[in-house]
Length: 256
Length: 256
Figure (cartoon, rainbow over the protein chains, first blue to last red):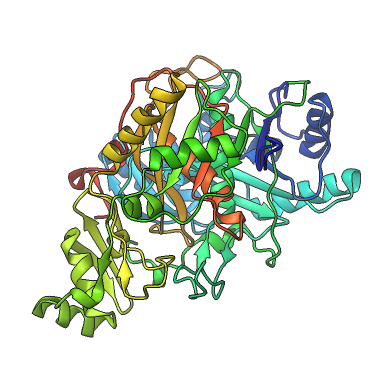
């Protein structure tokens, strides 16, 4: 490593226009890569912010069009939240895990335990009343984008759809992977010995979550917003697993 | 960004020898940077694995020297764990948060909710029976290392002590910050408007945790182990906060 080259390099793809429902994310990504002087290489990971995936897939709900159910009205009143937003959150969720005024932590129908079912308010152009639920199936979204780009670049790379989650026990949100294709989102290190040949006790690394957290540092540092980040320098040999593998099954979750 | 330079670059410091109790981490870091052709620059973050900090600080406990208390014996039996290890874990903890056979999740006396109080088994040379608790005060360890290196490099950079934690709700461990100096470990984004001028709802980013997660990707990818990683390309203007700021106070923790 005396040549001073980094082991890992993250490129924010500048100049991506505001994505609209129906936009072709694969074409947008290919164009953004080219505009930033980049081509996908073996081992690259393209991290894409959930928000633009939801938008491109038309996952936009106009709160003004909703009539909240009695349950949503009651919850909205109790939690001091817009009952129409509560209605959307409930529609995306299996159940409420924790609640307190201003806060609804739910089990999303995809299994993620998260605030507001990830329903997003910000950055929907000219529409205070429009919100963005998560993509229908973020692993499928990641796969579709990877397949689109593979036709252009023809090498072994991966795609992650990222979001930011709060966490029990620790303050602050961090980037996490809600969709993945082309890499082991969960990396099984069982049996890999440590430096002295003892088997590692730790069995699994949340590989895709660490990549999403790294990309979040780049997405968050730009004032203009950088919804796509290219991560270069990783390698993996383990079998692929989707972001769904990162969900801890409720029966194994001591904090559910 | 058409010059193709990454926004963020991570360098693993290769060639660091096995750290021993009493070693001077500042000197080791300075030497490793030089050996890798690197000098600290404005905005750099040096991420150091907890394990070598604990070792350098002599935080090594020989299990053979311990007589477990009756409580540790009872817990060891119930949880199928070495009662001497349980004794060490209890000595580092305020209380047990969750338990099941093979697993003890505690509230560390520093406030971290973590398995086994972070007491580490692996990579202690030639001593199956020696374990490494966390540093006494990882924020202080980070500060000391930063001050040592500041005398050499004289610029504004930061130091993070990292560890890997499991998490509720999600499978796999991720890198987190247990010590920090020179940056806002918790980044307050209250009031910063989104692209359309609406205040961001999200208030706080776990900046140091995202950096630790990114560094973990580099630490984990090398077979030889890379206990120091240089992260280059970040910037921050917010006030500094220590890693202790990342601990969610129990009274605000809905999952404690």
